[in-house]
Length: 104
Image (cartoon, helix red, strand yellow):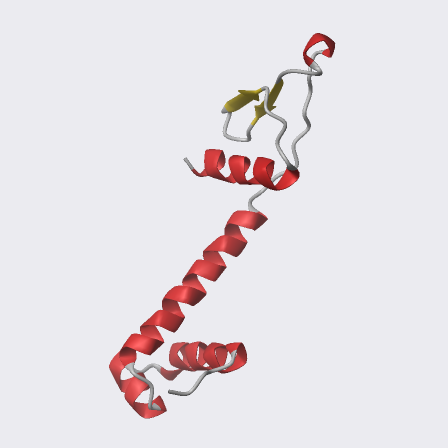
């Protein structure tokens, strides 16, 4: 089985879109199993969706009352939801929390 580079996979996916052929016809023409081609398409879709999610993040400003500065913060999301927490999140964990909350 031939290991394809990301560029080769992208060429296959782009070629299919431009070919006007059915999935089965295109796979036969290119000599690639339809199941492998479907895997490439699904993986490409997941990567595109992940890029859209990241692009959908917005900068937020955390405002904490002085008496709460050491214990609790409130994060108001663009969809109106609020997250209050006393945890000290890392930047990565906070970004993950925001993505999850905004997706629901």
